[in-house]
Length: 121
Image 1 (tube, rainbow, N blue to C red):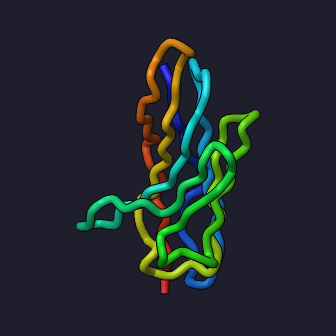
Image 2 (image 1 turned 60 degrees about the horizontal axis):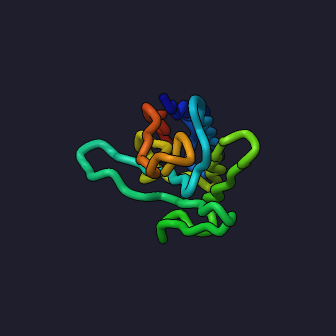
Image 3 (image 1 turned 135 degrees about the vertical axis):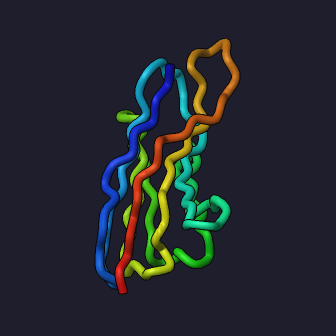
């Protein structure tokens, strides 16, 4: 069974930085895309950033220039470096991976448990 475990959330003042990490473990044959989502209280979950298997990336407009997503394929990890944080970045952040457990199986969606990021003004 594949598991994704996030770490690195916490409380930070506006303008500060945090780095989130996510490690995938278990039976993993290959990982396609890896993403970070966030869900603020009372709002829908939204995509923050995605990194594709070739290393290319995309970002939600409000985080462009402030957040950087990166992956380490040999370790099955994905990080999210968050700089110049704003109170509106406050949310639970979730790691997502599109993962195949073996060469005979299809890619499936896997989620981490989420990590809280709180930015105070």
